[in-house]
Length: 171
Image (tube, rainbow, N blue to C red; front, side, top):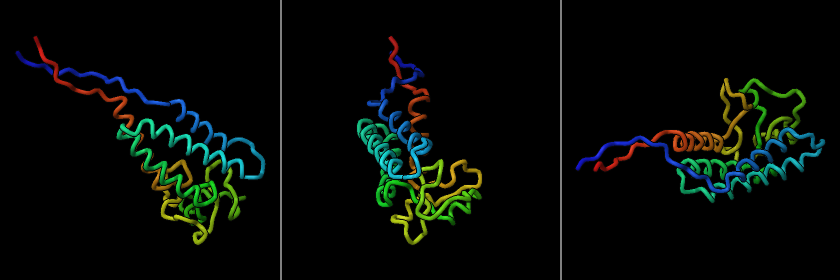
């Protein structure tokens, strides 16, 4: 009796997957919907989207990619909550991206983002905020949490899309 190797695509099930889509939809509403000049609804929606993601992540934590995404979500959630419901970004970081909105004022939401413009000294948990910039980045700035989320997404995509090899006994 011998064995042979067989390539297969595993069936991977994500629990409560609609919650992840709902969280994304909530974030898109918070960022792009015309909710008026008051940013309180945006702050509430952004925090709600992260809480929704936490439930999805907890239900799927056994997947390594989801665990890494969860670490990034947690890091972003901490800094967002510590700064009143929006992700802080400084003018210095925006200058690095080359994309400083003309109408941006300190303490106000930056249109089309999840960010609030803050002075460096007014940012709580600065090291977790949107303080990283890359020349080709379509996002104005990004955080360490965003790096974790992207890394976890790559791991999860590999788990979902790449074939596996297993040993199958022959008869």
